[in-house]
Image (cartoon, rainbow, N blue to C red; front, side, top):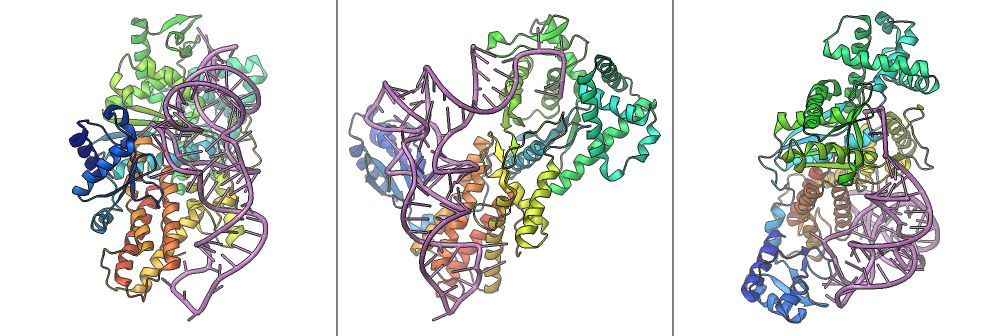
Length: 554
RNA sequence: GCACCCGUAGCUCAGCUGGAUAGAGCGUUGGUUUCCGGAACCAAAGGUCGUAGGUUCAAAUCCUAUCGGGUGCACCA
């Protein structure tokens, strides 16, 4: 692709004296291997008919070994010769090293201690892991970090309900909680605390006091008072629960959990400096950013009770990431209701660390729903938990196959989330996700196992990459050379679903080839085995990037 | 009220730095197996790309308006 672009660019420069970056695409197979609309692009500047320009370019390209035809209103359709295709094929399973030497900070998942992991957390964890995987494969040094609110009002609420449940500040009574259900127990307390807060003003005051007490406990490094003991034990329970889930999901481990408490001091410092610079101002007892002049919302950084809000803490987080890692790129994945909020934080931050803001990308995702659409609210407790999704997939898989295969269940769930463009709401259908047919994780896993099986059958027979392809061989070969281009798009757009779309198309192309051409035992066995090997490698590389296991048999 | 996101086949979704007859899966209907894993392949039916204007040689893609759905708009995260 790049070679073709360069060749066209040189032709355009030599023939018309223009320096442009030509658009080259992979057209419908009937048109050729690559297509470009340069002729139409430059028609005004050149002042000639697009077809005439295209003809001239085709002649120019022929001189450097590219067979090009002119079609339609002036498209340039290019067909690679077999040697060029063979060369591309050698690099088909390679991830382009576009980020070699770059430092990337990836922030995703971001669950709050004292609350349950819901379906949205599962989603950002899976997608964030994949984006990070791809960047890492492209040569970047990755720092995977995970942020979470271990201070704040929700903690005050939960502490209130815990202490009420225990009948006082008796940390030893926590031993009575079933170790297997600590996270559920905590989230039940959170729900209770939340309703208590909404029910009565007295509760509200008590909860605010608890919230403050949690901040104090951090600033005084208190690990000894009964209140502090309860807090630290429960916070640890939360982190243990998170780690369990990540392990179950088989995602790359996080390098670091950054709790809000850790970045609060840094946040407060920036708030103070911003106040001095009049970036933030006092208003009704709170400290706010007046966003309207930037087309943004006005948001509170310190509330009138003197407590930092999420905004202040997030400033601290952003500063911490920047100062600790001096990243070249940074991405954050959150639910999309945070979009406007994040703009405000980044706007304030740009006054202090403009490079950090320029290098940061905020990605968002929508709500996860089940078919039928039950709405979720963690405050009321009727939420779709991460574990509910996994259980539903497990059940659907068992129902469909009569077997329990963790690889398939995990592959199904991850793929179901990954195959859609990040950003919108997702309707997760457990039955469809584990389906043995169609665009699903298990389908691709099966395709991989099948490829391995054929190779196994061939034993250690000779594999020699050849030229003079048959039509089906050539179509497959060409499709495989698209892989590095797909990865390049993912790196640019942060959109992992392109990998899914591509891998599915690839397996379809292979299946067509395989339906029509015999591999083992054919006169062309050696050439076809070489193609098969590349196919297996591309599929395996792609699935690995997606965090989906590529089984050799299933 | 203001802002942002979304609206493509019955369902779930690709395609959106404008380009060649709008694609896939599921579902529906019909077909293919002396042969390497049929979890496959082939074919048919199914679309005024929410609607209406505009820009352009060319619009699902860009602009404007409008309808419908979602989210956010000061002390939650």
